[in-house]
Amino acid sequence: MSLGVNSCLVIYFEVVVITTRVGGYFLYVYSICTELNLFRKVLCNLMSRQNWLCKMVLAIAVSSIANCVSAFADPIAVVVPQKSEISELTKKQVIDIFMGRFDLLESGQRIKPVDYNNGYEFREQFYRALLDKSERQVAAYWSRLLFSGRAKPPIQVPSVQNSIEELSSDASMITYIPITMVSEEMKIVLVLE
Image (cartoon, rainbow, N blue to C red):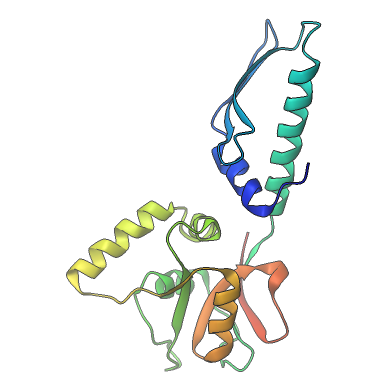
């Protein structure tokens, strides 16, 4: 059985509870994969003789989760076009840029952040690494800012590929992508673990 990236994302984010009862070796896996309807509620007694199916299901679940975790363990690269004058940014500067606090660097260069649409999985990972906040908390922050008229939100795109296209079209753009997708046309200005 081969799982795609979307399936891995669902598995990774939908694992709610995994508990072990020491006395009876029960493993309770809840809602591992809603999208595939692969698992719903699995209650296995690992000591019984008729549990070969439960062990197989558990092995698939653990292996899928491990693959998903390793797929998202890559650092996040904050990048600008190669032709940009920016060579490095601090974490605070990146926070200020993506949170709408400024759009002009100290050098006088205009900067335009490119973000992803709400609900895009990689966006959650970025804001967790950058601010230690959820996407919902960031959306609430922007709602307050937009209501007060104090800032303009970043350009939003639906995918990493669209983000890379936006980056190549304007030297003043800044975005974030998986470090494995950085190309020669980009400069890494900050890496988030």
